[in-house]
Length: 71
Image 1 (tube, rainbow, N blue to C red):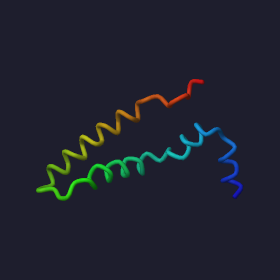
Image 2 (cartoon, rainbow, N blue to C red; image 1 turned 180 degrees about the horizontal axis):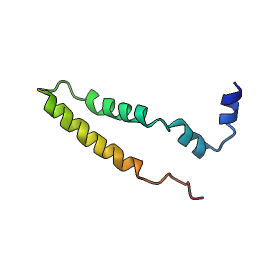
Image 3 (cartoon, helix red, strand yellow; image 1 turned 90 degrees about the horizontal axis):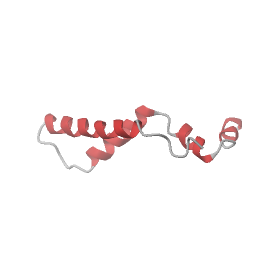
């Protein structure tokens, strides 16, 4: 409980950054989101292409500055 209460002492912007700092889980979540909407893949190659494009989009988000961080 002590760790959780100290978490809430931070501003909401900082809490959001702390909460979402696990990049591996974030990538997995995004890939699942991309592949879940497709019924089936005829072979492994279309799946790999879709994952590649998804990772390209994810990497663009990682390079974006954090909203209101410079305040």
